[in-house]
Image (cartoon, rainbow, N blue to C red; front, side):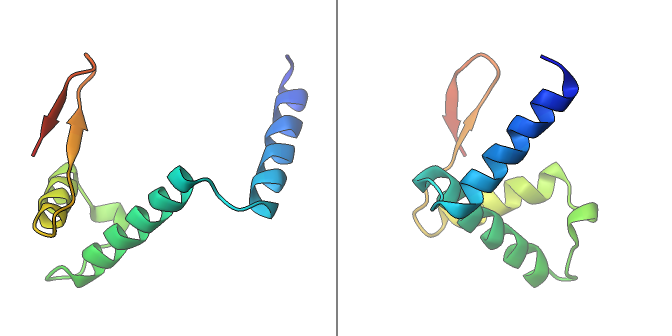
Length: 83
């Protein structure tokens, strides 16, 4: 498949997905992303995405665990471990 065809298919998929309601997965992913951005904003001092590190992501996941969210980290071998 050439690059133009691939790009056109991606554009059609984007238009289609933007006109229909998002899947439950996509909606949850969006809520999680928005929550993470609020978390960064409320840090002392506030952080922007460009200054965020893996350590900040782990801190955020631990923060969510305080409220009963089950956080699982998947390694490359398919194993799952909780924080």
